[in-house]
Image 1 (tube, rainbow, N blue to C red):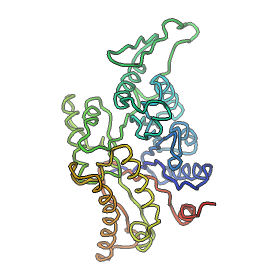
Image 2: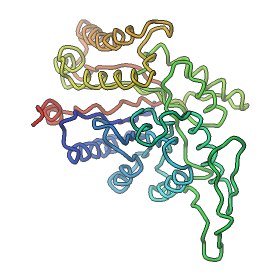
Image 3: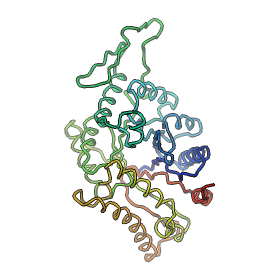
Image 4: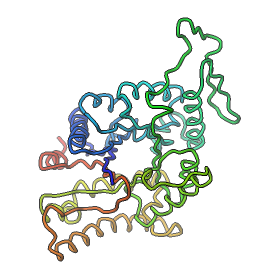
Length: 355
């Protein structure tokens, strides 16, 4: 099993933006020093808590501050940017990182981002699918490209202005051949998108806030897609994110995971539940899809209570203090998300009252 980290990241609203960016960089640098395989960084344009607005820009500051960890967009939101821009920027980043790069992609889930960009009423899943098709065509093609796929809104050509003698009209190709690893985040139970990932050799990353019993639906659908493509599904291609907190002693873990109503753990899940509910994606907190919506709130509380049960079970079994862990679950890549409390200093920053 390989270890990775997925960071939205999420910060209390009163925190200073400059300070949180520094802390998030320090987290990735520490993960590299600890031998983590990859670090996925999220991006949102209109979220004060999740305040990294461009994952590639943030990750570029880490290329020369890290040695071996792969730097991954988590994700580039493809409904929000022209695919030619994504293709060119990702290819350049791949060269800057000399292959230590993973392209994480999604449609972009935050509805306020969509509203700000004037695409709130658009089919952003369709925009996402159209965009990735064009990105791959750009990387596979040559000038003038002449990309005009049926039913696809994105048209790409440099035919009228191309001047190959001067290098004009040419877009860069990635450092990795034929392309970087492409990873898509998977949230919804029984996601059909993960079938398409399997067919196209994109790799899934199952979200950490998904209830554990839904995970098998992701693998089943991914394996279906790989089988359709005539390829044997490999569990090593599947990343599963889980919320994990390792404490120096049992009391700290119990406080973080259960007893402290103001703990970063509870703050994090409240943020996620509220945003997913507004986006109509709160089924991830239900045990059955046909349950009424108020059950999602009960199940979100159940996630916290389950942490408490695990802690008590560990105490009853006399587990050593360095095994006091809030969270569970693993597959090939255990990808704990960044919750803003790593040690006493960060915990104090999180709990510091707003000025």
